[in-house]
Image (cartoon, rainbow, N blue to C red; front, side, top):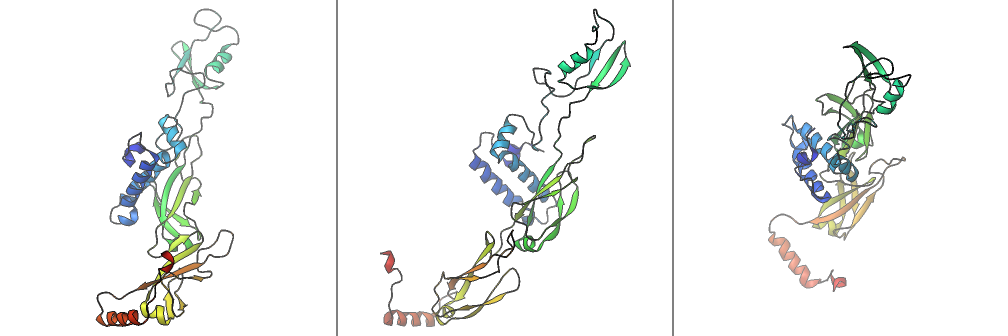
Length: 319
């Protein structure tokens, strides 16, 4: 993966706010839902999210700047304990001549002790004869490899509630069908064991999928509750009536009382989102009085007559 600063287009000294702003702008621009005809959009979106996971997190950013982790968040090899004080990475081959005490040899049984002191207790794992001496290869002492992969997936609000099976493309180019369970919450992680990267001699890593929920055209999420602004006509507000209200299921009818002001909120119990501990949230419906488009001479005449005969001041409490 490229340098996360380069991916987000920010300098290394950028503030946390600048990084957050750059991430949001790029995530919106390259979101797969906004680039349905671009097969590379998902990979770019994943790269942007991975970069933000590194430098958008204060602790990981410090680790990356110090060279402790790489652009994928994996620990960098720091050398063997007690090894080269200059901190050179990689492995070296050491050749030792066998024999008794004296020049070019090691006396007594101190050979293993010398190896342990040089390599922090790592034991020799094999030997190859050659060139008048013996070449030993040493184990790394169990250096941990982070083989996990992290990707982000965006689902609609309806898909989050009902569950869905979607295809996800990994940074490696591999594609998987992933089942998103019903009731998943924004920011929740799904772990698929054994679907991460692989390395000889190590168990395969896991795939960590962070679920994002796309903004809905008219519902707003408030915890386990939903909120919606419901447009009503002027005559429905004055005379009352029954209006249809959309829900995540089928639409329901809501009775609007006479003389309903714009901004009045009604509660539809159990029409929200599933709760983690069982039950369902509510749907809160707020009325918004909408006037007809364009100029209506008859309506204006009626309002002028009403204004002259029934004046009132709804802003009296503000003075």
